[in-house]
Amino acid sequence: MSAPMTREERTQRLADLRARMAARNVTLSGGPLMSLPLHRRIAFAIADPGAITPRGDDYREPVHLWQARAVAFVVPESAEVDRLRARVAELEAARTTAAADRDQQIIAWLEKKAREEGTSNKDSRVRATATYRLADKLSRGAVRPACPPVSPEDPHESPLHHTYALGRDLPEVEPEQPAVTAERWNAQYPVGTPVYAYPGCRPEDDPKCTRLTTRTRSAASVLGGHTAVVWVEGHSACISLTHVDPRPEGGAL
Image 1: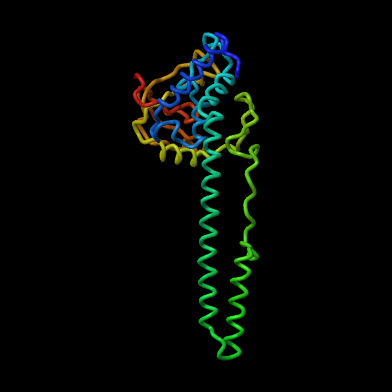
Image 2: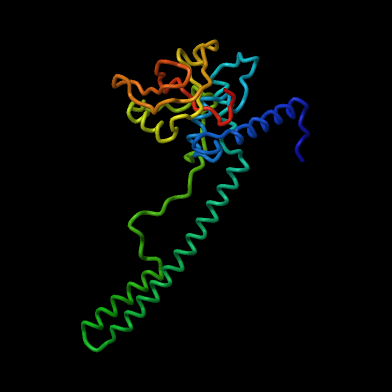
């Protein structure tokens, strides 16, 4: 039997549960945050950790630690991972059973065709013998697929596994081309999407930076062939998409 939690542990656990509930209540234009693919949840948590959990230490918590906490609240807990792995095992078993049933049907069909060839002449006997041999090989598992079967998943290679502990430990990726960034934004966020916009610098660079709680008033485009930008309500100039974050639906303006 596990030891009872201390008061500090209970307080921390309650805070964690509240943060996970907050993550479940976040709704983006693409749907509820927790229904999105894992990589999109992580990207949102890094871009806007405040939508999931408040910044700690009276807003003096380092940004990378704040982002890491937000990421932890949008990835599955161990119990959910175990449930997903059990479901995968169940589906694999069902697929194996279905493959065995399919093989039995193929074997029965081959044996039927072999009998239909008969033994009236040499060619018929040769075809019947070859068909029987193929059916026998299939029944013994001697026929192998062209591609080798996939080995059981190494948990350390799973997309749910990560070794990073802090936001700065996240794997680096190649920068996206501006045209691709604009096209992706337009596919996900129509004109009028609620956003947080930072005309100058981002809050992780300067906590006192200007933040606009607004909506987009144009589709994203490429400025000068080098920067993906969008226009927002309440601001006359365009703003780089790196300084614009989707805002949960229903947030106060």
